[in-house]
Amino acid sequence: MTFRFRNLFSGFQFITILISAFLIVLFSYLIFRLYRYRFDLSEGKVYSLADQTIKILKAFQPEPIHVYGFFREDQPAKRTLEDLLKEYGYRYGEFHYEFYDPDRMPAKAKQYQVDAYETIVIEAKGRREKTTQISEEAITNLLSRLLRQEMKQVVFAQGYGGPALDEKEKKTGYGLLKEKLLNSNYEVKETFIPRDKISRGTDLLVLGGPRVDLLPEELNLIQKYFDRGGNILILMDPVNPGEGKNLGTFLLEYGIELGDNVIVDKLSKLFGGDNLIPLVSDYKAHAITRGFRLTSFFSIARSVRKTTKIPAGFEVTEIAWTGPGSWAETDLKNLGEGVADFDPKRDQKGPLPVAVALQGSGGKGRLVVFGDSDFVANSYLNLSGNSDLILNTIAWLTGDEFAISIRPRMRETTPLYLKEVDQRFLFVVPVLGFPMLSIMMGSCIFFWRRRFH
Image (cartoon, rainbow, N blue to C red; front, side, top):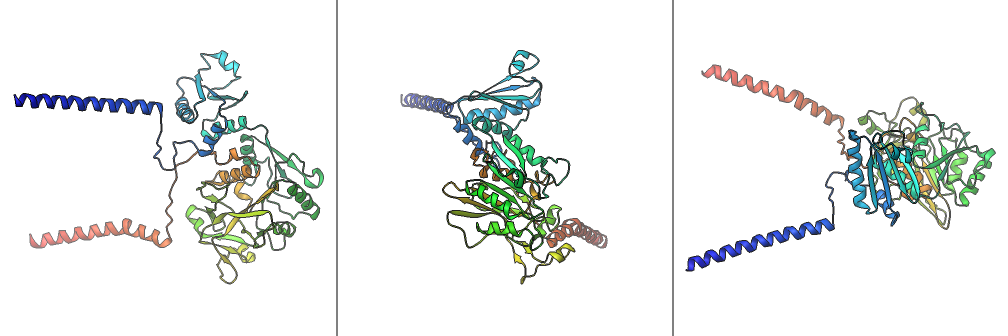
């Protein structure tokens, strides 16, 4: 009797455990179905949307967003886009997407004026935009364009010998930069300041690599533009001492000093460059560089730093710095002859600031100065973080907060920097040392066996 009672109790206990486990699984499923949450454990969060993308999606609330993809069923890019759009839909409940095959549904293709495969159409706020690029950057740029009420106007000052804005073939041109700005929904124009002045519709004035100094009359026009709330971006290469004096004096009034030097960085040799391509990987806290971890490559740059006397109503930040292995070479004559030796009495040891951002209060403008103009030229723009750095800078200067840091995430790399002695060690030990050690041990064993056997 006792044995049966124990068996009955054990059976009832077992059934109770099974029912409890089933209810736990059921309720867990219902909870996770209603409240979904994804975890991205990858390095650099490459499978998650950028923070700025999520910010733009929230700005649409409660407006719905409709995305239509025109792809053939057998196109591999369709799956890539669908995975990306699922992430958008997960982050924003009013994000809807559909796919159409243009061959099977030509009426839909005609309705949305689609004349090519792999076309993405986005509708929101009663407006429509389309693209053929399948990336987070392209889609978010379109969303930013739909969200923005008006285009920001970026005006490049011409007539100072700087890079040509429409030149895409030459390495020194700014054609690729102009293309990126147009894709980001900026209106790009040119102006000759002495003749055209600076119109009130200018959201940003760019002085890109001037080879001649600005006249006092021109700087007077720029200062008036800045005082009424204008924004300025200056990309100033190293020049011979005394050149660029007027522009240097203008910047000193706002607490910014252009160094009469050229930055030397021997770490560049590890990347196949020369000593005059300093690496910039240290960024200070600022809206431009928030969360920025990519290395930027400058070419023949000068130091740009803030002075001890900052005018009232302005805040100055040195936002980008070279590494500790760099220095500011002031002997430009010897440098031009290929001689670059650090002199502690004359030169300044790194880290060195190469970019300064200034912001005024009470409706005053913004100003950013870089000690190099080539890092945004065609040959350097797509290197590492160069493109992101200049686009973030322009977005901050124009007050376009939605355009900052919306570039797609990339897998982060952790480079290993080796000195020459370390490189020799890694060559001698594995390549020569281990084989020689094996030969010696094998020889010893061979002769030992012959002697005793």
